[in-house]
Length: 102
Image: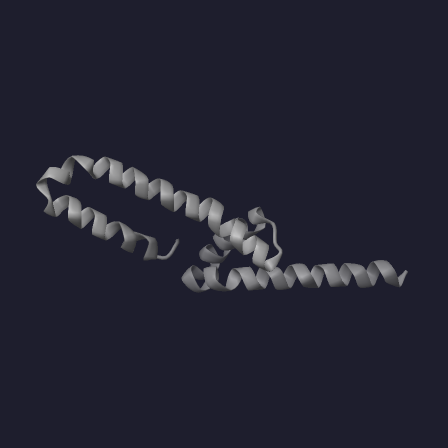
């Protein structure tokens, strides 16, 4: 489960629509814009930016965030990227030691 913070950006738009009677016909359009922008952020921008920063594949970032959220909730989502980067680094170092030792 993702944090409720993206929902906070949607609340002012909904309030404006409900408070302005002429704008109520735009509820569907506002909802679609919000959903599309949130999906682009969640599935494209976030994984690409994080993957560049910690040198992980974007799919690995997405999978680790999903697994982290299932195992630890919000804390799991925060901790999963550094843990995944650490595990990747350890696996690479162990592989190098085993490979170059023989």
